[in-house]
Structure formats: C-alpha cells, structure tokens
Image 1: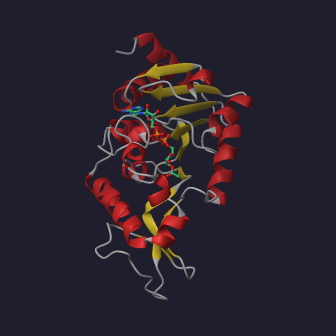
Image 2: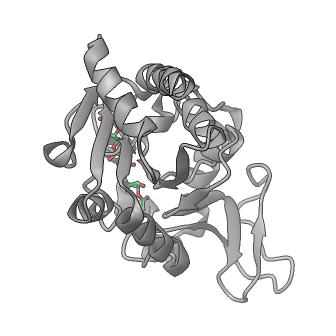
Amino acid sequence: MVPEELISAAAEMIASAKSLVALTGAGVSAESGIPTFRGRDGLWRRYKPEELATPEAFERDPRLVWEWYKWRMEIVFKARPNPAHEALAELERLGVLKCIITQNVDGLHQRAGSKCVVELHGSLWRVRCTTCSYRSRVEEPPREIPPRCPICGGLLRPDVVWFGEPLPKAATEHAFRLAMECDVMLVVGTSGVVLPAGLLPVTAKQHGAKIVEVNVEESAITSIADVFIKAPAGISLPRIVEKVKAILQSG
Ligand code: OAD
C-alpha cells in the first residue's frame, strides 16, 4: 500500500503544475490485460524482436509478422481502458494535463477519452503501404493476412516503429518540445530503457521540471524522480486524481 503522504505529494505537484505532461509505456495498459515487453511475462521473453519487429523480418516473412500483429490487435480489440487510462483522461478534462506522450500502440488512451496523445511508436490501428503512399486507419484486426493495398496491391504493413527504424519526425519533435516546456512530467509504466523515449524525462528534468513516477518496480527513470510511487497505475493514478480534484476544489 502506498502511503497517503506520497499520493498527496504527487497530487500537490500535479495540481500546482503550469504545464503537466505524461509519458506512458506498456505498464499503463498492463491492467487491461495487454502484455508488457520486458519483465517476467513480457513479450520479449517469449518472442524475438528481430524475428517480428524489424523491417528485415517483414521482408523475409510478412505473413509471420502479420500473424503476430493480428494476435496483438485481437488482444487490444477485446481489451478495455483501465482506471489508469481513465484517470489520465480525467486529468486532461480538468485542464490539468496538457498532453500524453505514449510509447504504446494500443490506442487505449484515446478510447478512454484523452484528446492530446502523441504516439511515439505509431499505432496498431493504422496501416501503410510498403509500395505507394497509401495510409489508412483500421477499425479491427485484418481478416486476411498479409493485407494488400486497395490502391496498388502492394503489401500493407502496421504503421508502427520497428527496431532499426526512425521514430515519426513530427511526433518526436512534438514530444521533445513538450518535455522541454513542461514543469511536471508524470511518467507511468515504462522501463525507460528504449531511446529516445527514455530521454524525455531526462530532458524535462534538465529544463527544470519535477518528475513524478508511477511504476510497480524501479525503472531507468527512478533515480531522477522527485516522487516515486511504487504501485500499479490502475490503483494509484485514480487516488492521485481524487486528491488533485480535492486540491483544486479547495483552492
Ligand atoms: P516495458 O515492458 O519495457 O516496461 C513496462 C514497465 O511497466 C516496467 O517498468 C514495469 O515495471 C511497469 N509496469 C508493469 N505493470 C505495471 C502497472 N500495472 N502499473 C505501473 N507500471 C507497471 O515497456 P515500455 O517501457 O513501454 O517499442 O517499452 C518501451 C518500448 O519497448 C515499447 O514501446 C516497444 C518495446 O520494444 C517498440 O516496439 C518500438
């Protein structure tokens, strides 16, 4: 159980922030039943990234890569946003949270009602053609794999970032601008080991921001956190948001 004083310290920082930005990772969706990447049951324990999440793997065996993405899309399709996603959406509605920068590709922040979401690693719910410039949103997992481009018949790929690929330029620039300008960064459920996303809290800190971290275990970010809440996000974020509301009402 997280001591009330820590929840209060986090809430005070958040409620008094002029520009609050959140950085989220797979841990924020763990309580929706979506596997994380690292850790005991993490995806990278069971699957090799180089066989499934690289441009070379897709060239070698697009069907295999699509099978894996279709499986992940099916899990997310059946999943629902959890109280952590909802708490972050509520913070935005309260006018406290400016934007979420996420490494997640599951779209659950948007489904919970968050409006400003910067997707650093792309989205499971977009595809793009490997031959022409066709891009599209998708509402559900593809029936036939590998799916084909309706314009040119080329292979469609998930619009996600694979190992060895650059991050989307506009999203990355937006994320670093937010990190430089925020005065509090709320870091939730990320190991912080994947760059450049892991550099965002460091950038924020270097520009004078306070860091509030929520994670079930220590991460690469914890050493620079001003408040570290060691607890599941789905339990601790709603508690923090309740406190933030109470502070806003009393002030
Ligand atoms: P990781 O799997 O590396 O880390 C998940 C983090 O969430 C860990 O620090 C866990 O301790 C924490 N965690 C787990 N359950 C939690 C819970 N209920 N509440 C709070 N924290 C919890 O996932 P990411 O940091 O998101 O990239 O990984 C970053 C990137 O690595 C991913 O976007 C993906 C992967 O390779 C690409 O695919 C490009």
